[in-house]
Image (cartoon, rainbow, N blue to C red; front, side, top):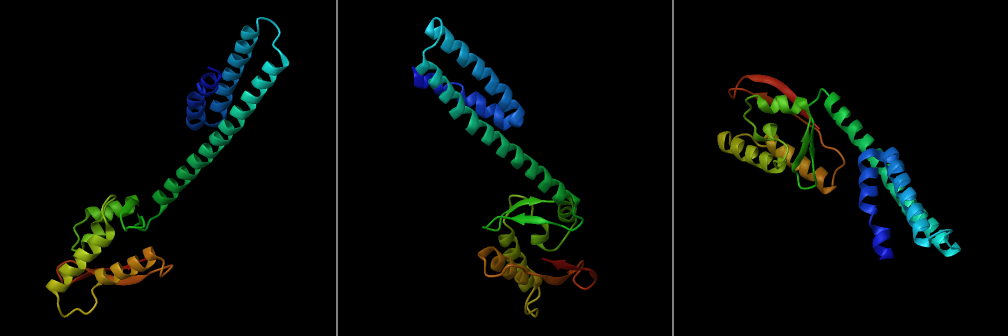
Length: 193
């Protein structure tokens, strides 16, 4: 019964701390504190014993500290996510963020606009949720089939570089390649990092 009373407010306190930060956690903790004081007072039918007051203090201390810590960490994390999104959106370069398996987890607006343009290379059209390495492999196979004379097509270089970075063999990879429209006319040079 007392264990249930101890755990009963925790979901609400956690929700308030995660959703509203320290201010919400403070309001929720104040409400739980008032309820605990009133409950202790009514249970004692008058002045509570020293043991009941000590249990109340321990309950409030052991509840308040973790809830406030969780709310502060959640607020800091929320601020970091907002900063990350603002930085990603502000970049003019095309940016795709890959996980350890090569799956695109996030792209910025510039990448999205570029991916919407007609392009002969599948890796340039990779979207969130798609595997960038598979797209590079597919593009390399397409170019080798279409141009067997080309020794090292750009998608193969990109694939090797991305795999080296993702596996930890290299900290950085950079290559330049030309983007062609009809196979002969160079539209522009692209630097990929």
